[in-house]
Length: 333
Image 1: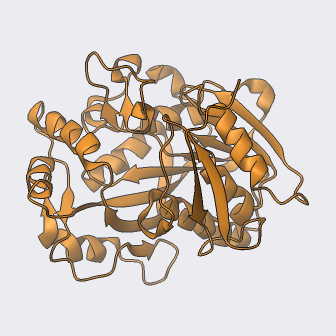
Image 2: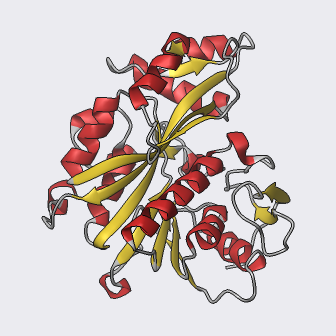
């Protein structure tokens, strides 16, 4: 497919890895269907992904394990793949995305920013969650997912603009009601589908905006058959607010669920505010208690934003591993 490029930007990856150019920067081509990373990644979702990769690398070294085969789900422009190559040292990669117009960009961006000394097997495939994988692909050591949450509005096309970065057609999937109403449908689907492909001791890294109660996250992993531990937890500014927050407001108005956001006008700590799950000092409850006073629901957050008050949300990066070998995936096709 012809590469459709509308912009070309530079991203500073130096805090996390050195680029092949040796200047700590990667050049990324984008189009109208790809999320636009910030030059300074400190408050970008990518910084959480890269921190999760570094945390996992630390844990894998202690476990005397490595990632040989890596799958990225919802790869967008492919910059997450560059992080996996440079931080985890992966050499066999399958990059998946539901939008056919971004697939050539993934390939082009990875190749353009790859150290020529690195031997890499890269396949890029159109895929709804993990539907692009097949039994012939064998087992996978690590699946990284950064999937959207919001139900697609009626009469909107999923492939229009960057809709696939934030929205999901929930009518296509089945999952337990508590998970669906808290907008975790695709994360759950990925976990269920991943059961077919994970190697023994393989992992899924789930990137989830922590706008929902913690017990719902626990229930999501439990019902999918996984144990999950926090790799990274932090607070960051909400981006694309006018595109994203109205969807959460609509979800609040149609159910009893309240989503958690944070007003940042009086927040005194520097953002992003990050804690690491492998640290001996990790205290998730203390972290959440420290920001509780700033919490508002989606409806309040949108009203505050329109008055000029900055809004943030928490981000969890989980490492999920199967509890056992049971295949329960047929229950939720």
